[in-house]
Length: 278
Image (cartoon, one colour):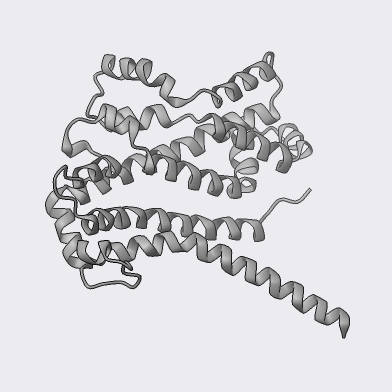
């Protein structure tokens, strides 16, 4: 009996911790939704509103009347999706090469890639902008997509995951059977590293979607704005409509929630189905 009571108490304690963690994680999003459904008077009142109001449609109507919200959302979808797919493909190829191939200077090259992770991206802003201007890519989504196709963290993450989850014996057996390197990568490595794909996709998609500085520098016309740059147009220097601002922010966050839920489900499925076990 004592053992069962201790087990029940410890289990209850763990559930309480998880509930508190979930509450503090979800509350900011809920608060943003509450602010997006109220007007300025309700937001600025003391105590402030803590339940959803009736201004959700009005605030969102003000958003789409102020900025090209749907156009900016579509631009962000294009940029984030293409960049994420490119990163998954190119970084997994590079990670596979670093993990399973032996070539001269491999360790030095891998260390050089890791060093680039320590350099703040702001330091490369000017040379990167110069290259974009020479290519005549200003006000073009290519200026955001192409520089983001290779990611140092993505190469590191894929290399570590492939090293620990793709057995060398399996790769050697495939080579003996006459498989090419591309076929080994596609038929052996890819099915195993789907969980790594899902994790990297979540990280990269969110990073590109939330990026503000670089799109602000290279995109000048409203028709090419991504959503983060477009949301800047909701801020007025004289009259600030907080309900409208938070409404735009809330709806701009919804695609991230959807992507996370979809890839999280894929991640769990990949762990429980068709895994290659050594």
